[in-house]
Image 1 (cartoon, helix red, strand yellow):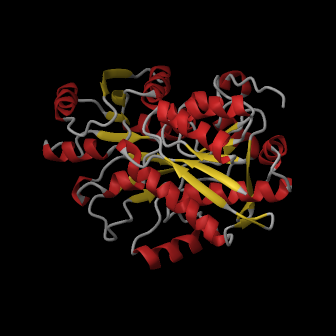
Image 2 (image 1 turned 135 degrees about the horizontal axis):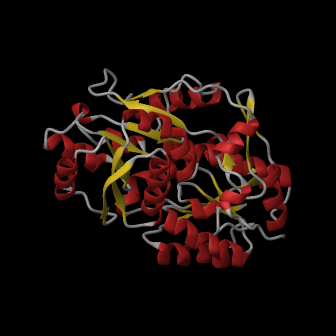
Amino acid sequence: MRIGVVIAKQGAFVQQGADLAAGLQLALRDSNNTVMGRNIELTWLDESDPQSATQNITKLIQDTKVSIVLGGTSSANTLAMGAVAKRSRVPFIGLNAAAREVTGKACNRFMFRAPASVPVYARAMAPELLAVGKKWYFLIANFAFGDDVLSTYGDILKAAGGTIAGVDRVPVETTDISSFILKVRQAKPDVLVSGLANVGPILKQLKEFNMTGQVAVAGPAVSDTDLWSVPREALTGIYGKTWYFNDPSNPPEDNQLVESYRKVNNKPPTDRVWLGWFMTRFALAAMEQAKSTDANKLVESLESLKFKVGSSTVSFREWDHQLIRRPVIGTAQANPSDQWDTLKMKTQAVVSAAELDQLFGPKDEIGCAMETL
């Protein structure tokens, strides 16, 4: 069974890519590197930009003859690879893209998305952020994710009668954002919303300007490595995440992952390690259910699989291929006693399937027109 992986090995997403790959490899190890009684042959290629992502997924499909592809460490790369998956009719699971288009207007029958979209994070975080104040400043990266953060969070703010204090667009790989932080200080917002690839530079330079705690920082899809990269005393903010290692609501299998990973690595797994691990297990289960390498049968199996997670199940929504699993929200804790345990998780009330579906958005909002097989 040939499985293709297109995950960043360089650039702004290199650490997230490495963590996704580490989790993916853990899942393969746990499966004894087999599926349907067959050995798994894994090929991992890079994705520095949409062009290279397109070239490499095409190579995996046409030359390596993979049956399924996992990857996409940015929304732009994921959208590019999704288009190839559609043309080639090979299933592709996006592991790290949060822009709404992936399961919205750019959706297709062969592309699936694992993390929540930006609008989902925005709806989940809105009560926390609006309680802080209604004057927000946006620092966003020049790519699909950043644009989506501005439009989605901006719409929520305007609907609540708030004010956008300022917007700055930052090149994706920029780490020195001191000039932007000076503008934030002058604007004096209640909340600084990050739409950057890494929130770390914001936290570091707020500390350098003695502004830590003077403005609330917030961001969706923030990685643990972002928070681990800053001085402990610089930690602050409210963040939406796919998963957190010290979340009291984690199921037993997640706690076992944390324990075994920590023994080997002397630190807990990041959210991206978990995401690579979880989605690889999901993909392998779909292959076992399909009992076939036929692309159409794999797509139908991914659409119908109800994957057991503790006492509940997780699945892709059939009409837009969004994985339905509620994100978590955490507040950063300055100077934590455990250097890795940077967040205090907000207690999440159990919601019904209907409420969860509403959080992820109804059909008329999503705008996905899925073709038939």
